[in-house]
Amino acid sequence: MTANKILIVEDDLNIASLLKEQIDKYGFSVQISENFDQIDSEFLQYKPDLVLLDVNLPKFDGFYWCRKLRSLSTCPILFISARDGEMDQIMALEYGADDYITKPFHTEVIMAKIRSHLRRAYGSYAASAEQERVVKWEQVMLYPERLQLEYKGKSVQLSKKEADLMELLMKRDGKVASRESILEKLWDEQHFVDDNTLNVNVTRLRQRLQELGLTNALETVRGFGYRLFLMEEG
Image 1 (cartoon, rainbow, N blue to C red):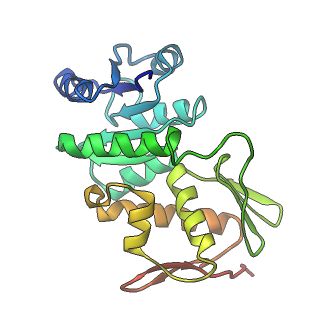
Image 2: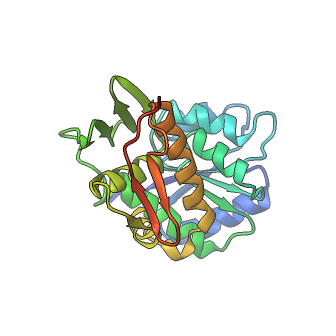
């Protein structure tokens, strides 16, 4: 069985080397980026299954490269950064990242997240490519493989986690989904997930729904969780 390939895009050689050393122990194939002007070319040549990407990079930042890489592939992209502000996480998800890990980090957290995202992208949790799935709720249609959400002729692109969250809520058919159940279904290693990570994904999904003309469609049930509630603007 071919080992999954991990690309590390981190300009601090000490951190990059430490990550490579630890990930190597788990049987993955790891490459550290050396040319920060041509990350996209290196990506196409190496064809990684997952990318670990820092925010602060020479010349162009990680947000720029995340957007470039996302236009080339749907492989999981995990940010690793010392910047822990909510806006940084929102920008990362906006540009197509699947997760955001703040420094300093524990190796166990990194490995848990890598394994989780690889399982969901390529393992037993991955969708079959033979037939495209469509999830319907009311007049809303979700295409999970395309990461596309449609409503009355309009469509928006979602991040992978936004699509996963939307699918979970759509399948609840208006019933409340607890925060615990969402964390359990969307993140295998939920005890390693920062509580703010779910908040950011909920905020981003609300904005996507508003772009479709659905205001207040994602309702917060205080002290419990979230549910979908169909309400059109105007």
